Amino acid sequence: MRYFCIEKEYDIDALQLMEKEVPRPGHGQVLVRMRAASLNYRDLLAIGGSYSRNLPLPLIPLSDGAGEVVEIGEGVTRWQQGDRVAGTFFQDWDGGEITDEVPKSALGGAIDGVLAEYVLFRERGLVALPAHLSFEEGATLPCAALTAWHALQSGNLACGQAVLTLGTGGVSLFALQFARTAGARVIATTGSEAKAEKLRLLGAGEVINYKTEPNWETAVWKLTGRRGVDLVVEVGGAGTLGKSLKAVRTGGHISLIGVLSGSTGEVNPLPAVMKSARIQGIYVGSREMCETMIRAIEMHGIRPVIDHVFPFSEAKAAYRYLQSAAHFGKVVIAIQ
Ligand SMILES: NC(=O)c1ccc[n+]([C@@H]2O[C@H](COP(=O)([O-])OP(=O)(O)OC[C@H]3O[C@@H](n4cnc5c(N)ncnc54)[C@H](OP(=O)(O)O)[C@@H]3O)[C@@H](O)[C@H]2O)c1
Image (tube, protein in one colour):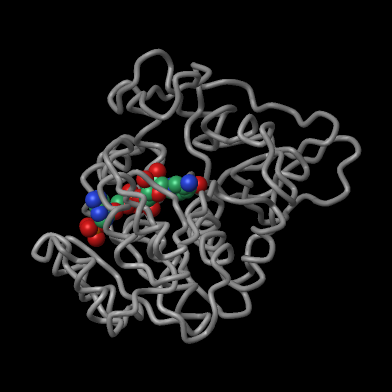
């Protein structure tokens, strides 16, 4: 089998294509022939060496992948040959609250990921793909979609409420799609006029260009009749959190997810206090959350927004494309 590997050096150019024997599933394991994988911003951090100091090198990268079950190990009852599945981001988070142990089972981080022709998963570390989705579409669900889903669930989003999304990456577009399905109003930001039009077509009620309108939090404030949004899907981090705190309503909710604008900087906590805003850190989600999300995706016929599918041999080009931030939605690698 062929697989890609971050061997010693943290650099896209140093990503190695390697070969080894196809592994056999042990007790409680499932062997999956991977058909597609998708990239997340986290994978750029990982290959650039800034995700974690403790990445166990050599490492097979990427957390998000989908494929077909080809062999099951002893004791496996949940799956059979031919099942269409996706791996869960955390192989060891069935449900309930996150614990210290959960991050130790993160694919493409603490343990080997999915940029390979065959991957062994734990029996409970798989979900069934929605019937209407291709492998390429299914490969976008484990991290980006689930993080967006968890972000809205944690804020108890209700019909008629207003949600703010930032930029047009994978998490933000899933948040837009889920929020629209829930009957919420979406105000979205982007740094690109071409992407603004696509956001409107996807259901954003209002779009603000954060480059031409750097005080976008004031625009959000005005658009909501000086009330603020009920929920912010905060993927920007240090550079946007202060503005998100101004854009959220009194008693509103901020789901804290990402670091697109950096992870260090000064943020004035006072607006959070004065507004009694809830700030909730989100770390992807559990398998049970993923299963609930998949039921909703099936029920509403939601289709992930894929910008581009690269062949397996062009994995480095896929990384560079994500790095360029030219994408709208997800960047996928087909594993033929
Ligand atoms: N906590 C978790 O569990 C979790 C899970 C998934 C992702 N994340 C984090 O969430 C963030 C988003 O991840 P992703 O995979 O969705 O990213 P992505 O697909 O790479 O999104 C990149 C897009 O974000 C927008 N962007 C970049 N800088 C921005 C800024 N300063 N302000 C507003 N928008 C900006 C740009 O869109 P425009 O061109 O439209 O401006 C860019 O194309 C990352 O920081 C990632 O690490 C965290």
